[in-house]
Length: 385
Ligand SMILES: NC(=O)c1ccc[n+]([C@@H]2O[C@H](COP(=O)([O-])OP(=O)(O)OC[C@H]3O[C@@H](n4cnc5c(N)ncnc54)[C@H](O)[C@@H]3O)[C@@H](O)[C@H]2O)c1
Image (cartoon, rainbow, N blue to C red; front, side, top):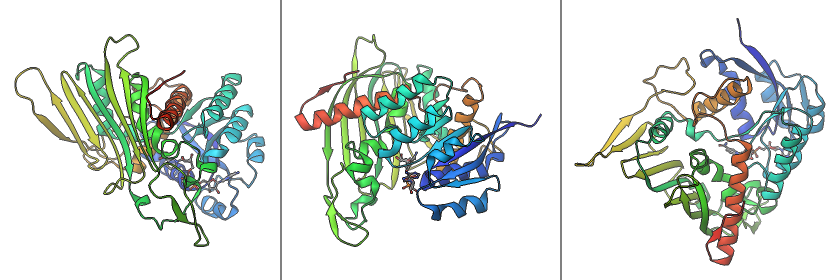
């Protein structure tokens, strides 16, 4: 029997809208997936973006600059929404209140209040399947790292370091865009932009963050606008969050969890990394060497890190041979495979091979709000659920 299809509308046709569309175009790469996404409607305030979608997807029947018209379309069953952060609350709430299923981009609300409003819409419409994006855990090396963690092979956690580092903003002449303005990106700055990526595995692992001391930096304070005038650039470029965490709520001990989100990290193009050190071993990975997984097993005696080359050994199997390399667009395909498998009613393949839940987005807002308070007060902030 051929798989069923789900009809999607996309709101926000920029960078991430096109990444989703790219995954839809190569959906046949997945083996035995229960659902096929079909793009039937597209919406952007900039109509110049329509032709690319219409030219590549014969299934598109509706093009509109008004997201309300897309939500009124009875053909649209699910929506991918990839718009600037100040629009998340309005459009995510409208999508859920229209009874559509939603994959929303992070940070899932420009601030904690917006996030709470989105979760209230979901509470009113529990039949809607709603998730938030985050693709890096789908790298095969991260999947195996998380299997190792879940199997308890690392022992009691001593320390965790996770982060996401960019460096393109090192150039002070890079023009300002919505991601560098408080009114459109939000007060979280780089935490709103990069933070969900860094928090996904720690939150899914169930680590309980009790408090945070945050150091936030605004390094480039002015940038050129589209007319070449230098205008204020007030968003935080870099964030270092030193958190005190517990492995489980009732664990007697805490451990340091350092989360770095940096848009100005010289030498780093797009490095997502995770390092976990425990009493029985260690595990580390960075997208800087996207195949390499390093594991340390400690059972007494010598300690030595082993390095593994991971191929295309994905959670959701594809037609690509297991020896071949895995990359960013593969992680997006895996993330969408996870979204649609769960949407179709399938049990998640693994704990760490599913998308961010709305409850996890709420945790991120609690953390980032506390981080803003910590930086301002120059003190440790207690996380307040
Ligand atoms: N998961 C990831 O790796 C990742 C990467 C980059 C961005 N993002 C997130 O994706 C979202 C979008 O970012 P992007 O990089 O795609 O931005 P983008 O600027 O490339 O695209 C956003 C689009 O939204 C459109 N838009 C603005 N107002 C609109 C409205 N009222 N109605 C309809 N469309 C409107 C813009 O015209 C633009 O085309 C953000 O939440 C961002 O944080 C995620």
